[in-house]
Image (cartoon, rainbow, N blue to C red):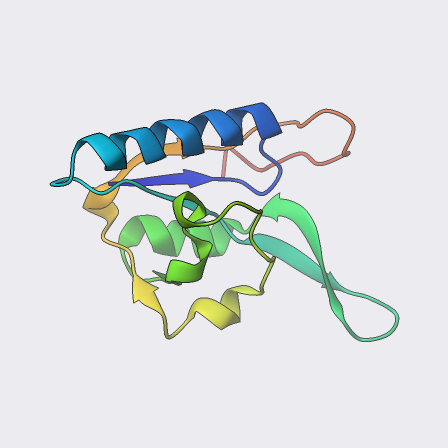
Length: 123
């Protein structure tokens, strides 16, 4: 089972989701829960590097829901104690394909506090 969360999700929500998933994984070995961060859009900086905007990449997210996009196992937050690196969607092109039927929950905060981000949840 897969839970998808946005990069701008509230820390308390992320902690609760990861804790719950880890508990489920330790209790029930037949169903594995994974928590993935939905890639964010990025912008080019003055020095040519890319910087995450924190906003959900809607095109990439649509591809996930259609089963035509990939996520990398590295992003499974149940397996790490720290946040994931923010990588451009092109990084995930040749990685693990997500079965849309395995997605059971999507958590995207529409307007996170203090960040100025407005996630395009209607899209």
